[in-house]
Figure 1 (cartoon, rainbow, N blue to C red):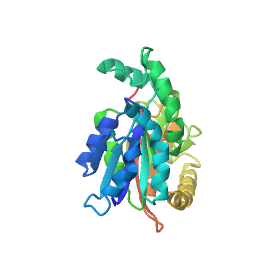
Figure 2 (figure 1 turned 60 degrees about the horizontal axis):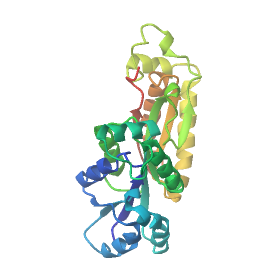
Figure 3 (figure 1 turned 180 degrees about the vertical axis):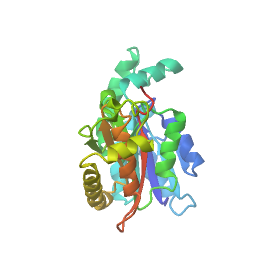
Figure 4 (figure 1 turned 60 degrees about the vertical axis):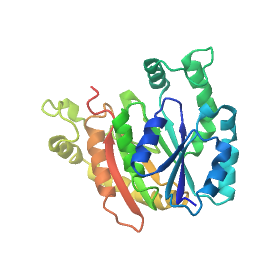
Length: 288
């Protein structure tokens, strides 16, 4: 049997093809648009083979066959097949723009508008999304950024380690839909109001030092990192190996960036038996 099966699904237009190609480049054996009813059979056929990393792309293109997915997942669980569910999402606006730019029809919009097809698909996938082990919102990611994110998560397969993405964002652009935890750091004095720091970002030493030196911030970050470490064994027991921690400030340029960098740095220093791989990404830097 394959070491682990990764089931890739999600909204049409959210980047499944890009993910499939990225996984292939990472050495995964990828099966695209497989009727979900065949998932248990595929697991049997790959049992004992040389395939160590197997990814299967399933989506609503399968029509009525897609409705069998939940039953197939239950069958995999009953047969003790190790698998993870990877869900790709994006905002309605992003999906509409992508379909309009490619001039391709949405698989569920029929004679209606594209947005109607998106609404039907979102309702159809709601329960599946709630079961996902990994959710990535691709609304603000280009092809290369999505490929990089896939590489960060799956470059070595789904190992017995927790992978943490510490994601900075600006509240005025919306809370990331793929966040597992959200931390508000708007209580910290804003470097935006310091003329010489305004054009800089939290990635610079000048801004980072100013943010981290603010009253109570060091204790705040240390306490939050401690709480995260206490949560990780529970996540691992529940089979959740990828966690997105969203750190927000007003514009996602100064405070949240500096705090995200520091949290990722501290989490990368392993102080427990559980291996933690942490990195920081910054959704809204450069957006102004």
